Length: 81
Image (cartoon, rainbow, N blue to C red; front, side):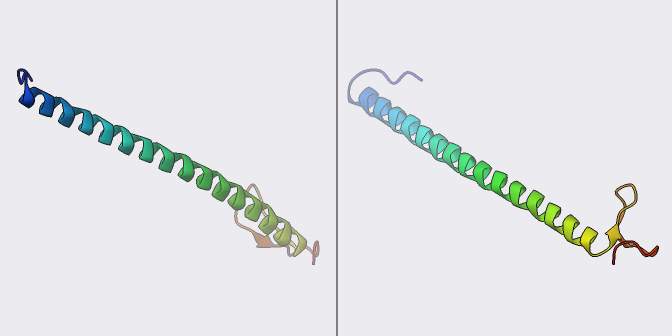
């Protein structure tokens, strides 16, 4: 968009520069938020995996088993507890 020269052109150029700076600030803020969320997501995934391992160890120690990754069932054949 051509606004000519002089005060109007300078005002338009300043407004355009402000909009670009605002967009860049928003873009930077969003990127930082995504990085923080990815970090939290990774920690949550690690916690979930560790909890699953602990649960499986506990269930095995209590005499449960899983056949072909099905539901956990208590052993009836005297193995375990």
